[in-house]
Length: 348
Image (cartoon, rainbow, N blue to C red; front, side):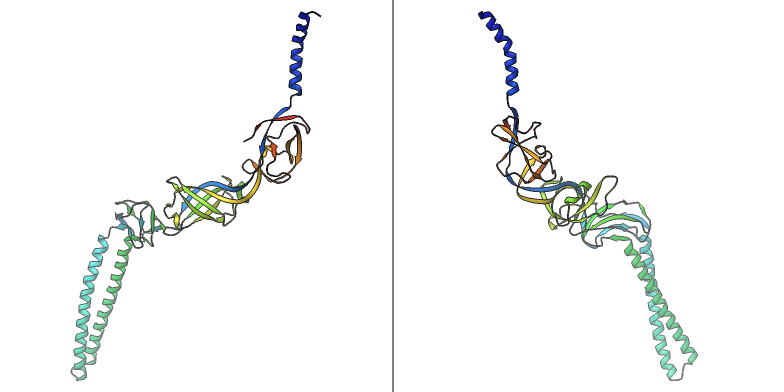
């Protein structure tokens, strides 16, 4: 065979040799090494801060607003005037009644003195019984007049006090729906007030996470306004009904005194610790298929049955079948057991 024919034959065999090489070359797989680690499961969501007790405040009398000395969001002590209605008419009525009461008191005193003098003369026989009875009636009428005016004065004083809306306790004025000059009708509640005390957070949690939640679980609360501060709390009430429109349920987180800087209505994020697992084996969920994982032994693929938990955040916990330090192929390969494989890189 000539040299030219030999070269031509080799040239024709090269594609076949290359195809054979790729055919018999082991498949490339990536592995992850199992390590025992502590794991904290949590639910992350958002919500809003609520005061321990909120109330709506209003006036029992109508009138024009003349003063609003407290601003929205301002903290106040019990008894602080939050809103003042125009008191001029009440003050005039109060002043008039006081003058009438003073005059009636003087008339009562005169009637008492006159009766005492006439009573002494009656005992001496100088005054008739009819005259004495008339003086007693005058004295009684004077007393009644004084009592009536005292009651009227107390009524005006009470109404004057009602012209001021005061803080029922230490707390914060959340909302005021009127301004100076507005006319306030009797019975209308235009102020929203939050009583001071431990606050709580109301969270909207996806209903699919309900099984992970329980009262007493610890939580960390953060607000965008205070990025460097975290407030510890614990799960309190879990709503018994799901919001059908949003697919969420309301979860209450109770805060301690260290959450006093959080204002009612503030939006916050929350992380609820639902479980704390010690020294567990975790695998990417894609490494487990139909209860099996793939291992590499002497360059060949080996399938091993395992017991794994449900998928949480893309990972499963290996409960049985593997131990720390073992290398598991990920993702689960589309190869038969016994296939020749080679490890090209370790999965992160």
